[in-house]
Length: 595
Image 1 (tube, one colour):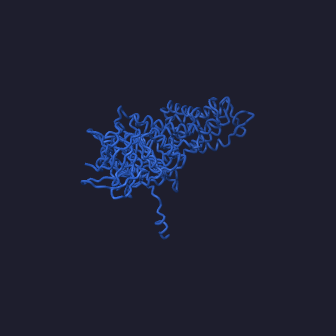
Image 2 (cartoon, one colour):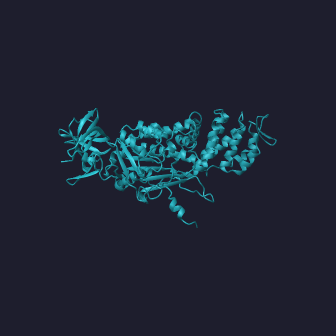
Image 3 (cartoon, helix red, strand yellow):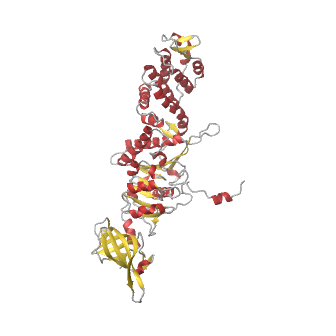
């Protein structure tokens, strides 16, 4: 028999008022070898109603104004608590939800730890533990089957333990389930701060790290790894439009013409070289010559690294009155005689066979623009911004991407570190990687999915923010729509997203609303708290009120995988497994003598 602590004295809707015996104020009690928690806020009581035990959580406490004269002459006050039913026990075990309510004079009892654990452990794996419940100090397992089969959000201000929770969650998963995961699921971390490039999360044999870098080592050597993309994936409209931020109405159709021409003629040997020679002839001999094509020809000569052609084109200029190009006293008219005598011999020595994919792309873009200008298809000022973006981005993209070298076996865990990349690459590449894994997975998967991909985005506000004013609205819409599609449609294909962020209010509300399970650390900003309040329907008011005051490593866990919200103190990982996000120990740093 449990310890009786009081009785019901009022029921107002779903609010239950209990009169509590004085001796139950102790924090911990022991009875017949079982440990019980005393009556306090956020503890649980069992109220017997017939053959059922109605479980209530205590939400408030106060003293009644009336006084009671005890037998020894001392005056005591009546202690009352407010409680809310959360479920009930019957012959089938615990059932969550309000179905039965207590009546007046029903007795209330403390609950032993084992029975409290059975409430939260009912559909969980008792061995899958990342910490213990804060108030009850009971280690409770998480329902990993339902948790990782969903989109997860991990939120918390800097220093609240958010990174440790993310690392602990996946470290326990790989420690316990790696043999079952291998060959069936793939995990990809987009790591903006280089926190997971060491020995974190998974053994080295099952982990592939790409430390991308847009910086250059002395001597021109590449300072980081390169992420592999197949030729077909690079030469695709969506990829190129994403890499170079092409606008929807003018620049994407232009890129589509570039790719259509490549697909039509690329199977023929020397097709690009022949295309260049033809475009040069057209530019010099067109009936209505466009002056802007001269700069494009000079750019092509520079990218092909043809010095003789560069020197020749430096001497060519536009003659306004004659309406054609000229070189000194030689005028290049539409009949082509002057071109054949003075330019064609140099142009005929063009060779594009040694160009890599990046150089091929920019040469094709310049050639296509020359052709379109001569044909009157486009306005130069509409395509020129794209051309400038391609030229400025190409150097960085060449340092972080490798086109065609896709032969390495996929590991269970792939970490893509963007710590040493510039802001432009940090903004574009995560979208490319998300699209890369999403599209490849969508093509392979069957129904129902026989494999899964789990995309983990740390510091997600860097790419999922809808507050940015440094980019055009059209590009921001495209960026968010891509991730919104993944998070809305990915679940049916077996692709799941985990996002971690310091500022959930900066993330697109559409994305946050599609998350299923949450680990919420300390948040103090009003906008963040408002978002939590209006997005997460599974959190009760008491748990929500705890969020601004949570200690480091403590979080509220709620969502579709959990029948009831829990407040968990997440265990701290060993130092060699912690993400590289720890604060600087100034006492140790400043106490060391300088060399």
